[in-house]
Amino acid sequence: MIQRLLYWLVLAALAPQLNAQEKPRVLILGDSISMGYTPFVQKMMADEAVVVRPKENCQGTTLGVEKIDEWLALEGGKWDVIHFNFGLHDLKRMDPATGKSSSNPEHPRQADIPAYTLQLKVIVEHLKATGAKLIFATTTPFPAGVTPHRDPEDADAYNIAAKGIAAAQGITINNLYAFVLPRMAELQRPANVHFTTEGSQALAERVVKSIQDTLKKPAPPAAKWRMVYPTWPKELAHYEKVVCAQYGDRKVTLDLYHPKAAGKYPGVLIIHGGGWYKGDIMSDKGLAERIALAGFVVAQLDYRLSGEAPYPAALHDCKAAIRFLRAHAAEYSLDTDHIGVIGGSAGGHLSGLTALTTGEKNLEGPGGNAEQSSDVQACIVMASTMDLVAAYGEKSGESVVKFLGGTGKERPDVYREASPIVHVTAKSPPTIFIEGEKDSAKIGRPEMQEKLRSFGIETSLHTLKDAPHPFWMSQPWLDQTSHIAIEFFTRNLKPQHP
Image 1 (tube, helix red, strand yellow):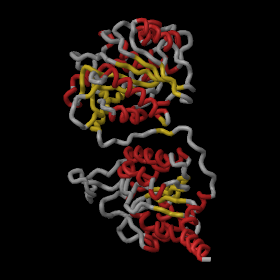
Image 2: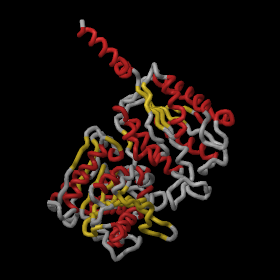
Image 3: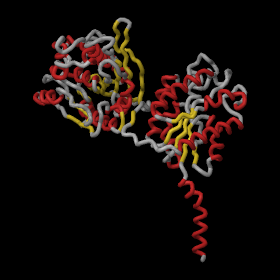
Image 4: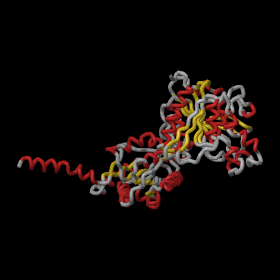
């Protein structure tokens, strides 16, 4: 009898926890506006969901990038729905001298729209990885004259940027901005971004309705891959838009990373893809950060595209970038004797061409620092053709015609000169290849490896299972690519490595 009584007492004590485990789990992320409405949401949904929010103010996307994984792990994680907002802190003014909020309209925003957009994309990728159904709540409007300074029109501008990201990712939008705009005087405190108690309750009703509707929707399909965006690790020094070459008024720039710890580090130049006519360095920042964290100075080159300047302009920019790095080695902790190059697709072609044209003075170009060498000591080619004559000599695609200034029949000598396979010699650096299993065959790569082996030069092929063409930009293949690249560069660029 006593045992049975104890059983029922224990069961009664555990009942709330067992009941909670059966309920959907909802995470709310946001600034102080969400801090105002979350208690009402929790009360309204007490019987149908477990609603959790970090105790702290999540502020803007800058803090969000830093702490998103910590927030996602709250109370064991495993969320069914995540309702999130960032924007109100991003658009406020900050004193550049103190790093604190400012009432000076001339001071910069905490994160301008380009920075906000990039950082919000980073956060969204982390949210998507949970498999939860996502809801983005737009930033609520506010009147002129609030403190710290915010421009009322910025709320709409930042919302436009955020809604574009949400739409592209299939994320539900809870348009709190449109809900509040005609009722600002009724729901908000005077000259304030915050809401009255009644205003917070009204917001909560909208949030609850959005969560309830989203819970009824089917779960999103598991993502086969996810894009990777930069996280700006604290261990790295980061420099943006460093001018490495100049042609008249045209400046060619690098983004640079190096470990903050004292020392000299080997260098790696990353060359982005895009068919030589498009693309930018942003897609490769995940790779850049991973290599830099392994103890390398990493430079990403924003070279001239074919629509601006056809071949050999891009090659000249690559070589100018390497000469610049050597000329400014002391500023970036660079070991000038050990520099590697890596690129994917069109960037892979340029990586191979840069590495294999060692000593060919006619291809150096006029980018400056002519006293420095553009030689590299290791090369990685990702997903790229090595023989442009064999690939395009008879049937040239639009992008290669634009890049090389004509068809293969019209400019056979240029196609030959621009083919990395032609430049293999006994002085060529160790060169490896990384390709995706689902990508097309890369013409000239097997033959080029045969030539490298004939000179006793290290070469190998790494094929990533199920990987598409631009595998190095997304998971799960980014980490695989990084592992291969770091091992290869460490072995060839770090003389102290056994």
